[in-house]
Image (cartoon, rainbow, N blue to C red; front, side, top):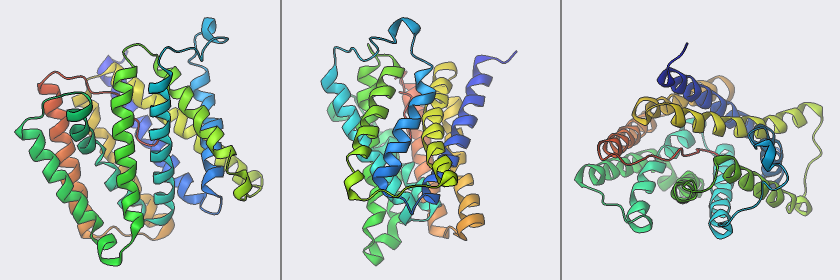
Length: 294
């Protein structure tokens, strides 16, 4: 029998692998409009979550006393998802994944204003180190005036709002309800883009697009279960294995070789994030089960 910590590690490894596959599929689907990909991500992302709804809630699963907070979470999540999908199509995979690691930095800053949390010198120092890493990674974007480098940062800001909102919602709302509202939202948002020109996929591409939804939905559930079962300080560092997958996939499929500056910047961002996680544990503050791609 596995211990809870061992199961948590297993679920985190599954989450990292599944998220990495989703990134790969999103980048592969670049010939299809972003709105069409959003629809498939939402519609087929419902499948894994649907099975978590308690049987006695099937007819009334949508009932909530906190609709405004759910709406805000969905809007911020939608902005983050659109940003990361476009970024994955326009930038090297390792660059996007590295910049996405900056989300805890924004969460730390926003928690001061939205949750009235006190942030000490260690975490402020970590935020500073992390943002230096972001600047190092983004230098080619500054030099070439490439606005696509801003998209992973928009994703991070959106996910910071999402994480803090989930922290508030989870005090009374089940995770499956929070997830279902979001997947329904992105499905509807995607449908509204049909007039912009969807492309009819063949069978192979239909399976590819459907797998974006299934892998995205499954990865979020694996991540949530990992944080639920084990200590965050134990499993959180495993998330950074996704950079290894990004480097391997990027090189083998698109001949993308990460620059030395990208790797140095990513190391700084990861180091800063780990400091923030450790200080959160030290202060015994609960870390929410953040989702990376939604």
